[in-house]
Image (cartoon, rainbow, N blue to C red; front, side, top):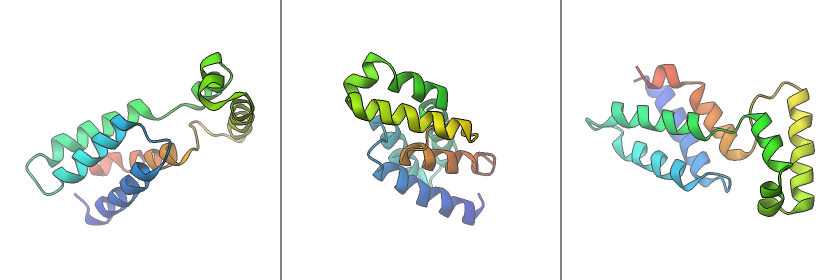
Length: 119
């Protein structure tokens, strides 16, 4: 694996794990991947990690729908949910395809390198 890309992915993985919006499943997959680097399990764990990132990244329309739902209001509170929905609509109109929270931003950065990471 390309050392520069690996170091970049490791850095972004630490950012991802530090993000308050990172799910516990993604944190676990990230830690398992970090632990597997340099071992015979690295390739298999890289694939699992990429799969987890792809499953957990939130498409912008999903974020808007959730923020505008009763469940979103329950999770975020009414005012925050309204603000998240407005922000999501704004970034969507500017071309965003995914949520721009710290976890999703880090996941996107890693996924942008997935072809190299999976070699």
